[in-house]
Length: 364
Ligand SMILES: [Fe+2]
Image 1: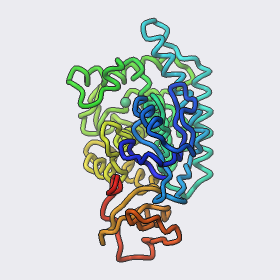
Image 2 (image 1 turned 120 degrees about the vertical axis):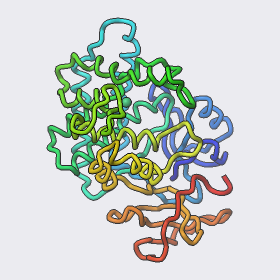
Image 3 (image 1 turned 90 degrees about the vertical axis):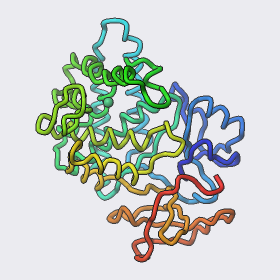
Image 4 (image 1 turned 120 degrees about the horizontal axis):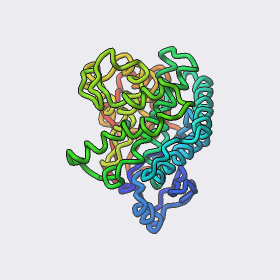
């Protein structure tokens, strides 16, 4: 299984992960062979990437650290909260029901339990594809990454829950940003960007009455776009004015936004996203948090296409947990079915190295 841009999908590929509609019901299940009609339907639904199974990705399994079931529950709750805000935005009934927040808190707690049960694994996103699912997916990814970093930095469970809640709810105010700005393809005009920045105030306003939400979580919501050098918003806070939990959420938010950016036909790879973040640390983001992110994420998720230093094209089969830049690979020869028995373990082949991630197969 591997992630491909919809423009690169061969008509006879097989869907390897379900795609959901705007009600979070199944649009297309896994195992379905892609016909031109299905592809057209997905393009019309603005679905831009798919997980497919083809001869090159035979036998490659993407086993998510956090189960799809629990992620889908989180996405469903976020959708409920988000939509309740869209409906309420012209009225003065801002208070989210405390029960929804309790439900979300229980879920964050469940995700912490899952994370604690898998000590050595590195995280890679197995994104949910679906109509209008993008914003909820991002919120859930930021929360999971924040919990992984928080745990590695030694936060206790109580603080992890506060961190997770702040991280997942930080962008809830985007429900009040006009759709045409929120979903605009391409660069925002200055006045549109100003409106987009207001999502922080909207988020804080939506959440401020809730007694079930801690002040630390609220702080994350309010400050998640501040930067250490004072160049962020809304307050232009700098240095010590930005607490650790906020710094964690900020790094995760930026990282997740880069790797899940849908505005380009070619996804930005994890290693490129890391280089972009590296250029921001330590002036804008927290250096320790950034270094910890490197310890919890998978640099080359299974299914990633890579070019080796010797020019060979390969696909990542699985990772070596302690050596994130030296996974196990399989060579790809275009036009030839993959030899699934042939593995190249970069932990054993010391003269080989990954030169770069390749966005698509030469024939795609
Ligand atoms: Fe935000």
